[in-house]
Length: 194
Image 1 (cartoon, rainbow, N blue to C red):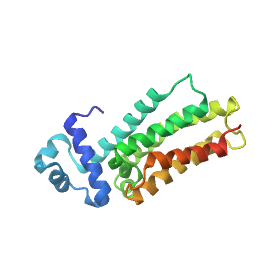
Image 2: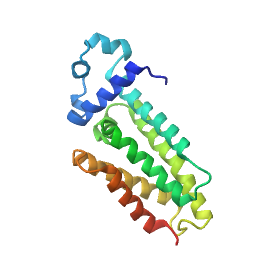
Image 3: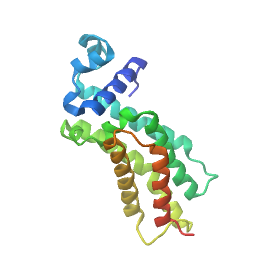
Image 4: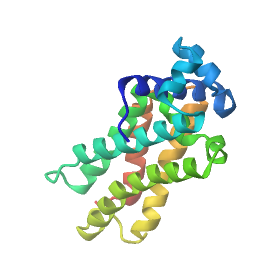
């Protein structure tokens, strides 16, 4: 889905509203107020609130896939690639905290099947980049084989999700990159073979 600069502005504003007021606070009226637009101006870019949320989630999935693909280096070992993968995520969300709520809001999942499918797409993008890295690391003796790559993927993604949730609950008051790097090192302590 190609989005215009104005649509990107709208989805960023929607993310800010979701952060401040949750799903129930995201209305076309509130979005128009946040953007200093008329409601009809919002409707020129999106048909509905659901379309805005879908665009936001699709933007995140596409952006994440592009960033993680670009950051992948075949010259780095799997441990360094693992660190880079998560540092990339923490850096993006530090610069764009308004997108955290979209991914971690339980209320979003109740909105529609299409939104559920888009949230699943985001998870699939994460798995697409993480699981092969863990498998390669296991095959080359960098990561433990005691735990399956599937289980390691779930453990690592769950840990990342909890870290981001704690940051959101703390109203983004701590430095997610610093705390994220600590978490990366803790995970590596558990899975890395010295």
